[in-house]
Image 1 (spheres, helix red, strand yellow):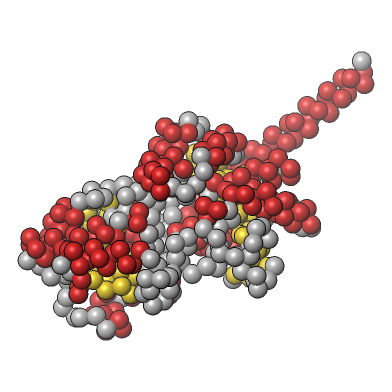
Image 2 (spheres, one colour):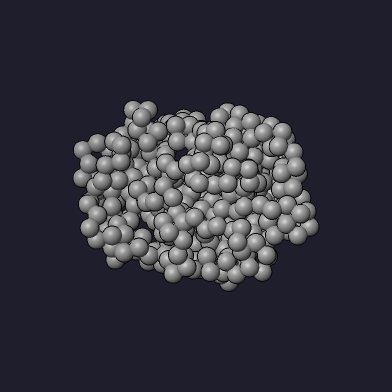
Length: 430
């Protein structure tokens, strides 16, 4: 197949960890590579956000097309909607210039879906949509802090109606699509996010700690990902504070992520607020901000940790718990969204309320006091990750959707053409 992946703000070439660079970037990059390895021709369309970028970049055999839409600057995704008409026109022109037509387009996020709808109307290319986050769910949790316009809701409603297939990443995502958007169950396909087994695998903990210079015997809590308020990092810090004050256990908390390799309150303003939280919780000297790290380093951080913790207010899927499990590390996650699906409560780790540091501290204490339990949970997580969440399995599932949608579209086109021909013949006979 010839496949177009549209990802307007999340380039597969971006370094993950920044404010607008996270799970979607990783998702698009990995499914593009896996589809290409399976013998398919894959192009990714993403917005040009730097003036010196080439028109087309090569990513392991995948073409990444940098679409001129708006100023060639890094802009918050909340400011990109006005440029989607320009984005659409460029992609349509590019498609028309190709010698071989695209068989399918897969839009990622609602703005990419808006582009995909125009392409579908103009060129007839079937459209698969993954939202990655739903506007009504975001508004429910973020309220006035949600920077997207209300126009997003109408666009998502239209996408739910007109996409040939909708990818739900977890049961909660599917439920939200049905309850909040009245989606047709017959067009929803459940396909999770994943991990690359070559990229994420267990490393001996002692060896990993030596590589990082971490204390050998410490109880280490890891928080890794984008440093933004909705990720609930303040809850993790407070949980480590309660662990010390109420359970008498000292933990070392490492926070990996941000907009720069060196932790910087100017580049990542949220760090300033979190440092203040750590002071108030009495764990300022045990809370270490590491900065952003490359993907090739992350398995060392996961493997070196006693436990990985992530307690966002909401999470459409959440790739980091799967990556941690793939490294054999137990996970304590918020009982929300996709984390509720990926983490098996009591087996691969625990689920806790999103804003309850005392509940988090209870679970941290249990793991610190029972290393054998922590090992069993880590082993169970590794087994679950390998069985359910590899990118190869994700890509195979998506290919099945593409083929079904492409076949249905082809049959529909042939039927319409036949009906048109018959009508014309009938008119001539008359």
